[in-house]
Image (cartoon, rainbow, N blue to C red; front, top):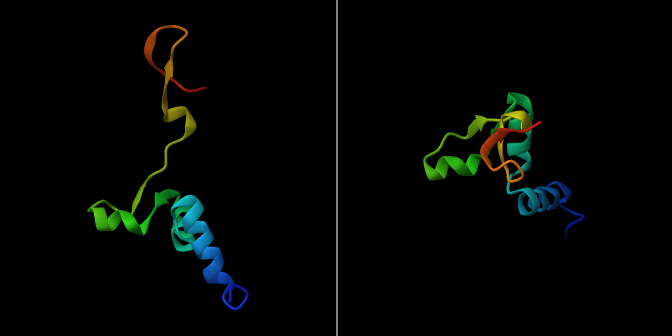
Length: 71
């Protein structure tokens, strides 16, 4: 049955492993944002700004500072 519907099988596998459908991934790549249609059902926008790794704060326990920019 899976061989008869390869796109559906891949779509289900993608949703199971990443939480996003193939359409969500395509929208994310084409817009440069993080897109997920399921957010609409939670009252949120479908696409959000994708953060660069350097924009995500990290905890630095070695220096006992609260937040430092990632390198």
